[in-house]
Length: 613
Image 1 (cartoon, one colour):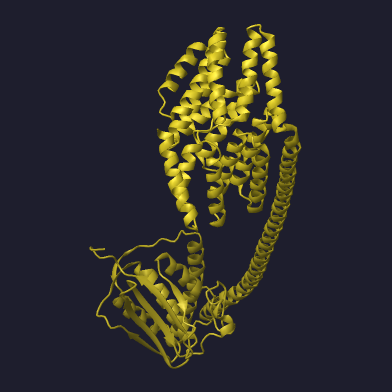
Image 2 (tube, helix red, strand yellow; image 1 turned 180 degrees about the vertical axis):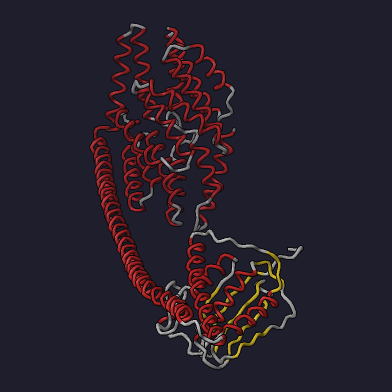
């Protein structure tokens, strides 16, 4: 009843397809085709005459017109299988050849796989099982990486058929396991049919290896299958025939074989009919009835001659050779591409290596140049240091000799002439005291510089008023300066508490102001104290309207032993000492090069932290 219903649907849908030209594949007909074809694998065909083949051709034309090549190749493979079942091997070969050419033209891996499967079908139904297995294996290679479980299941079922007939049953367990895994995850109407065929081949396998217990278990599952009555009866007769043959029940084996042969003859399955005639002849041989076996073998030869299998073998081999040539060309092209890829890779690697080497060499050259510049700078610095030290020694000898000469000279006069009046003695005493103070300051500067460099100078930090310190410094410098320059102190704050060493702060201010007084014969020397609230620091500025500092000497001004004017008395250590002291109290000192009316020195002193900070 199920077959009649499907046939009626087929007639209705087919009529609609003939009446109207469609621009795409009819999905309902395509689904119906797959359902029917899943019942027509290897041994049987459930549709009479050419209905299934005509439906394949109709859908194939629609698919080709709509450029739906997947449908075209799948319907083509079903058509080839159906043609082989009916013994139309010439048409099957033509169809397989056309499929292969179209697949190669489209470079469609699924199409090539299905064309190879179709070629394997023709080998299988002409009993050339070795070549069939080879074609199916090539088809499997093409299906690698393609997610089409249905195509793989159909190929596995035909592969199992070939293994049984080619005495390669040792390969069956692996194929059956893979097929079952694919069937389990399949979700389509054909799943029950595929499961039915798998259990049938499992039954045949266990019979072949003499495992009747497991064969019976598989047969029980076959008997529960929900498939069409015609397919069910045909396979049940086949399986019962094999059971009887295995048990030596030749009479029942012949009865079931006759039932299978009758079904195959009705469905026009010539390939299967010839195969089971041979199987029947084998039963007569085992019954020791050679005359009957000989008669059946004659019938087999007659049927084989009627289809003229040899006429198609040359065409089959040509198609297989075409595939082999194409595959060789593809393999050669793949090998060429692989070789080309390696060449490109090594060229890229070589280029990358060259780039890396060039970059490394450039970096080394840059580093070498930097080192060379640094070496030149250090050499220049060393030369300047040597020159400065030489100049310092020369200056020191002069600076020490001058006050010593004054002290010695005035002392000798006082000692030699006892009748000198009191005023003259006082003047000579003042000169001796001034020269002694000058010599003492020179020695103190040298000791301070040494202590600061070795970080051994002691600092006594305490809170003091910076405004008072500045007033005291102004008073001191006014007392010792020998020029007409006017000293001015400017501060917007009444007082400013700093956490510092007041003696060292005075030392810095006195050095800066005394230096300014040396180079400012007349004019103004200004000391400014202010606060930068944003940076949280006090700012001290000492500026004058003197001769200023030449631009070429500005960057060396804080170097030790550096003197601006050789004819002015001084050790060249004052600014170096100022810089080291300011650094110890966490401040900064610099020359304001933007000031052009004389010289301006600026230094900072951090403000004390409040309780909130």
